[in-house]
Length: 105
Image 1 (tube, rainbow, N blue to C red):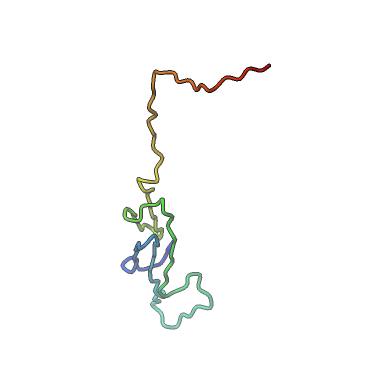
Image 2 (tube, rainbow, N blue to C red):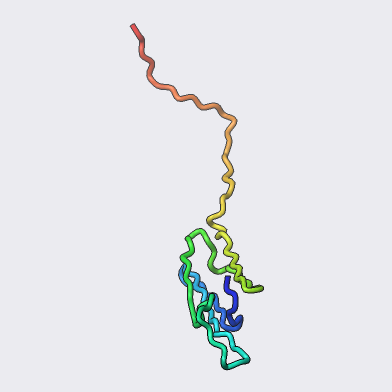
């Protein structure tokens, strides 16, 4: 969640399986210069977060959407990492393994 950030400052980049989110949150401007805050819930300034993506994820197809203070990232699974069915060749010939016979006296 990224409430209160400047949407124009939001930047999402992917490089070498590292996803980086950068944004800036400005201090709230008050119409009265006599207002001061003792505690604020949201820190101001520029910040960045980095996520390491696994090799099974496709960093080239990441989708990002920012709506109502929530950043949603969709990171698809890479095609080569998806499970796939392997066809099994079948033969109608029955094969028997035979070896030397021993006589059990």
